[in-house]
Image (cartoon, rainbow, N blue to C red; front, side, top):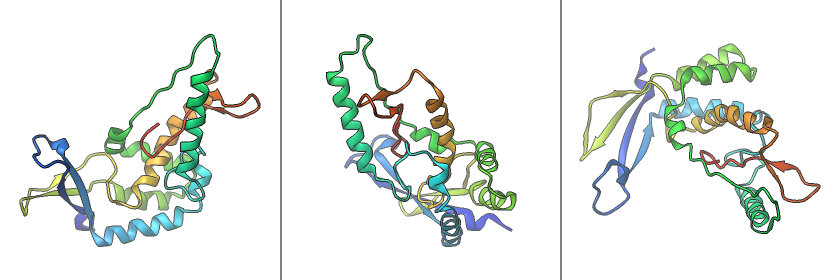
Length: 201
C-alpha cells in the first residue's frame, strides 16, 4: 500500500507579529482524513485499556483523571516545601520532554507495545500508522518538497499522545522504583515522586 494516506500538511501559524526565528511559528499538522479515521479507530480500541497501563502520575487525556487534581496536589507539595523543617532540605525539578515527543524512537514504541501485551497483529497495524510519514510545509500558499520522518510522533494525530504516554511510562516506572525520591504531604499519605502533565514532569 502506498504511503499517501500518511502524508501530513504542516501549516505555520504566527505566534508574534514580526517573526524572526522558526520558534516564532506554531506548526499545525493537518493529517490525511483516512489516516485520522484509522488512528481514531485504534484510539477507541485502546481507550478502556490505557488507564490500566499508564500510572496515575499521568493526568492528561486519560479517562477518569483530571488535570485539576494534579494541580491541587502540586500546590500542596509546594506548600509542604515552604513550611517543611527538613534538615536536609527539599528540591524539585521541572522537566520539559517536548523534544522527546518529536524524537521518540519507533523501535522503542514497538518494544513497549509488545511488553504491554498487545497482540502482534495489532502492534503491527499501529506501527504501520506511525512509521515513515511524509510531511509537506505550506509556506506563502506554496507546498515545499516532501520531508520523510525517521522518528517521533505527529502533532494533531489522535493516536500519538496515548502512544507517547506508553513510552514515557518507562521513565515513570524508573522514578517510582527509586526509593530516595519523593515526598509525603502528610505523615500517613503516599510518597509522591513525580507528576506528569502530558510532556512535562
